[in-house]
Length: 295
Ligand SMILES: Nc1ncnc2c1ncn2[C@@H]1O[C@H](COP(=O)(O)OP(=O)(O)OP(=O)(O)O)[C@@H](O)[C@H]1O
Ligand SMILES: [Mg+2]
Image 1 (cartoon, rainbow, N blue to C red):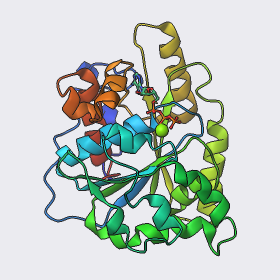
Image 2 (cartoon, protein in one colour):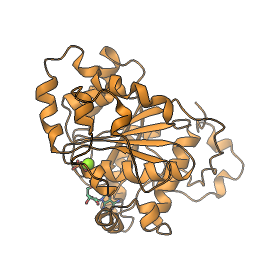
Image 3 (spheres, rainbow, N blue to C red):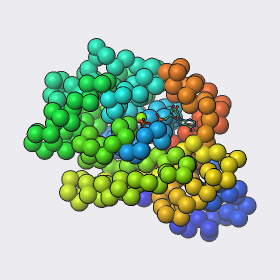
Image 4 (cartoon, rainbow, N blue to C red):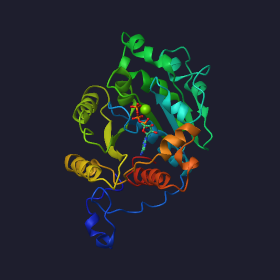
């Protein structure tokens, strides 16, 4: 994989680089080169069964940043709360949703795709109907593979597909893990952050063994980091101790700009492009591209 950093101490100027919050060098990841062609997409599931850790915010902001770098990006609302659809200011009622695709009420995934206000960023929405999906799908043949099948016809249209999972490890999340090439785990920098992560990693391992040998843990993303508190720094230190290189160098700070952007129904990258929070998500996009996890 490109971007392996095991030899980074050998890089010239390493000692002069500023130390970032994860204790490693805080680097400016290179400006991504333009792509000569598009697709097939790498599918990344944003997962954490803990609620309110920044899954939806990361899906929106990272998706918009990748689109701004010329990567064709599809984001999938896979949570009956429909927060991703709302956060992008897009309708989720009286439109074709991911629920219609999962249940085969609509056969063509393209019919569910909506273009957002950000160029190159498309959405498949969800609404509260999705909460009934698990009950309907539980008796289906190959019930874990339904999302992978639904997405197959659009994979070639995109460079990356991000799935915003709901806070649970139920059948929908297992479908997301089965469809995915990679998993990104947003982790809020607070005391109980690591609780439940072992179970999540175990679930990913089971899906890899039984359903989807290709799925990898792409990285752990620390969110809502507050550099002013010892607490945030201690939690991040512990996360790095446990997960080492899996912890992404990019760390997302805590700021009220995110809820503000949600109210405005716009990604942070267009709501407040000059804010450090927008810069952080552009940095995350560059890091994932440099690591080879996005084209
Ligand atoms: N870096 C941040 N700083 C401050 N607030 C944030 C940050 N990231 C997200 N938030 C806010 O925290 C709340 C939860 O974030 P978000 O909805 O992205 O989490 P989630 O993991 O998707 O939640 P759920 O599990 O309910 O789907 C939202 O109000 C969001 O605006
Ligand atoms: Mg969410």
